[in-house]
Length: 114
Length: 115
Image (cartoon, rainbow over the protein chains, first blue to last red):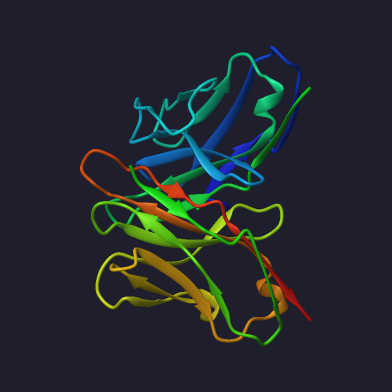
């Protein structure tokens, strides 16, 4: 069964609205990541976490917040969604101790902001 | 800061031909290096990874990659491609230093295999 699960898989939001993307992993990995994927940009790191209670800014954190309430869950929050945040978002988990930080990805959350 | 460059946005080859997808990295030491593949409407999956030892690493589905410290490169190769290899391929780097677990990706190379 899928070890990294994202929800919702598809979302249409209005400009200025709040959006929460959720991610759950059953790999027991310490590290979790949120990326967005856009044509021509590949995957860009938004936020990541070393463990429960920690969040770190990635390369493009502006307009996003993250929350890691437990080992298993890592959320990405858009407080005031904008059309420029229309994208596909991927969550991943990784274990730098045992697998060289190999990442295991969810299937993505497609967000459209209108 | 670390970075990964994949200079070819698209590559088209015929089925049965050999393949090389290029990846150059920038980092002050030897990092972990990865190749991932993404099939349509799916997440990324690991093909292979390198940290130390033999510079040629074998991965799934007969893919291999060669690390070159002098060229700061980690090119992906396959001797004979199949139509099912059509996908987007990403090169990635993880510094694994004591103060960061960032994993940085290149922009990807879309591979089209013609029958």
